[in-house]
Image 1 (cartoon, rainbow, N blue to C red):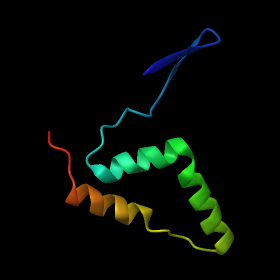
Image 2: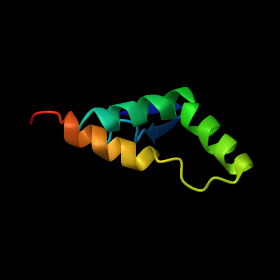
Image 3: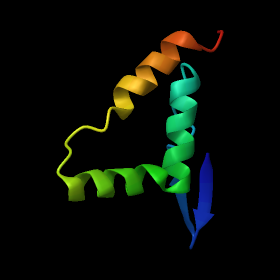
Amino acid sequence: MATLRGGHILKSNYMAKKPKGLGDSIEKITKATGIKNIVEAVNKARGVKDCGCDGRKDKLNKIFPYKK
């Protein structure tokens, strides 16, 4: 997807990679709404290094894959 801003064309990577399953779709939604940034900030403040998001994403992709 390309957007014209101030005479420049900006390419968006938002839809560059097709989702493999439900986990990828949920990750895109949380990034777009800012939820992912909030979770990361809270975890950083608490001293938590890994919230487990990647593991959940992978598990959801395996359980609910999108058909090709």
